[in-house]
Structure formats: C-alpha cells, structure tokens
Length: 370
Image (cartoon, rainbow, N blue to C red):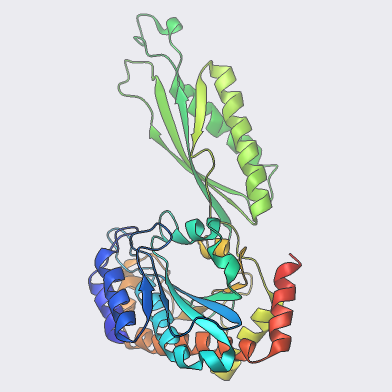
C-alpha cells in the first residue's frame, strides 16, 4: 500500500478529476475479490467496494480520499488517507463474519472542492451504516478534531451601466451594493459568536472605471461551529445583502440558493472513548490540542447519518497541511509508517466496538440523542 500512496503522490489529480486514481483503486479492490460499483452516487470518480455476502447485522463504511490540491499536489495527505482506508478494508474483510459486520470501502472524491460526501449524505447513503471512519494526516496526533460548518456562496448584484461622468445619476452601481454588503457584514461581526467566520473576495467589480458597474460578485465563505448556527448566519448575511441592495437601488441573488454545505462533525463520546483506548494500545501519544478546530470537511455531513470518526496522525513536526513542506513529507518513512498505524487504528476501532454489544449500544445511543 506504500506504493499505492506514493503513486498517488507522484501523480496527483485534482478534485472531481481523479480518473486514473479511482480506476486504479477499483482495480486493486477487484484483484482482492471485491465487487465494485463505479460510478457511485452520481459521481464518476466515486466508488464502493463490497466483499463477501453483504448480509451481516452491521455495516461499516471506510471512507477513502484521493483528491489533490492545485499546484501543491497531495499537501493534505489524501494519498496516505486513501491508502490507510484501503489497507484497513483489506485487513478487515476476513473478519466480517466474526464482527457480524459488512465492511464497505467507499471512494469519496472531491473533498477539497464540492465534497462528494455531502452529495452521498444528501442521498441518505450513510443512514444505512452503523459507523464510518477514516484517518487524516497532520503535524500532531489527535483522537478527534473539531470541524466547523462551511458554506460557500456567490452574492451577485445587478445595477445599470451608464457613463460614469456623463450621466452617473442614471446609473445604479452594483459594486456599491457589494461594498455596502461587506461593510454590513463587518458591522455584523461584533454581534456574532466567536465560532462565526466570514472570508470573502470580490470576484467581479465591473469592467472599466469609466462605466458604472452593472454587475458585481462577492465570493463568500461562511463558517460556524454547528449546522444550526450556520443556517442563522446565512439568514443574517442575506439580510446584509438585501439591505445593501435597497440602499443602492440594485438587485441581488445568492447562488447556490439551496446549497449542501459542509456541516460540523458531530461528537460521539462512546466511540471516541474506544478510539482513545486504541491510541493507547498502539502507543500513539495524543500530542495535539483537544479543542483544535481543524477547518471544515465533508466528513461532518457523514456524521449526521451515522457515527463518524476522523483521527489525525502525525507525519511531520511543524509543517501545516496545504504547504509544500507537507507535500514533500507524504513520501517520507514516517508517512509510510503512518499507513500501517492508520490501518491498525481503523481495524482496532472496528474490532473493539463491533465485538462488544454494549459498546455498539452506547455508540448508537450517543448518536441518537443529538
């Protein structure tokens, strides 16, 4: 599996375009006796691998990532994460009868952009599973990082173009609408919770200084600590846009209007306790902050369908993810060791929970009470 990871690292494919990578992973599964589905859930580069009878009492989803970033390749370590899930699945396939659990390997492309797991979650895929898991790479070992909800939106303002000097009174300035919306969001910040974040850029501010802009586009990311607060922030941001449009006599629209955004990763105390025990059994020191906010990921959407776990393994001492230094580290001996350790993490977690009915019930109870 080290060769699989290194091949992905040396041949990175961008989100949604992981054609060769996904085809290679499917061939590997088929070579080991898996039945595969590809395309899967409407995504050309997604897949699912099923081994054996597929009629056990429980179902486990091993999430496999393999998309890369523009310019800096696998600087998020998805080549390693994908290899870990593949190796764990191959290790668990012959334990399905003992655990009374079907272990499915699900190829989840496009994490860095549109988030295939969001689409899969919307289709109800994860409602049929009892647990989902993957392992991510980082510069610390963390049992369970926190993820924020994340929405990506385009606010488009429309006005009326006229000569900026000859007859400006006949125009309506779309860029002014965007500017006033940004100012309104800045005023809103003082009344939002600490977990609320707004990151935006003006994608289109007009064509030429001598023309009153008839169109302007604000590209905005909104983050929140949980799904409910995200929905409130979207409503408040829409109010900022509406007020700015009234003040500037322009019109506005938000796209997408009904987006499936990345939601927060729901916690599960019983499952996390089992995972913490696995860390200790494998001699992995949890050396990262327990309250670390790890950005946003579509694993959060999975956690609203079934208990989901996303531990992080350290492969470097200092370099953050999404850096050239981290991209170089994914081929290191330390990273290769993490493939074995990560596969053990998943396999031990599955065995610890699904060999103990009390743990299964506790994990389900934690999931259902939220």
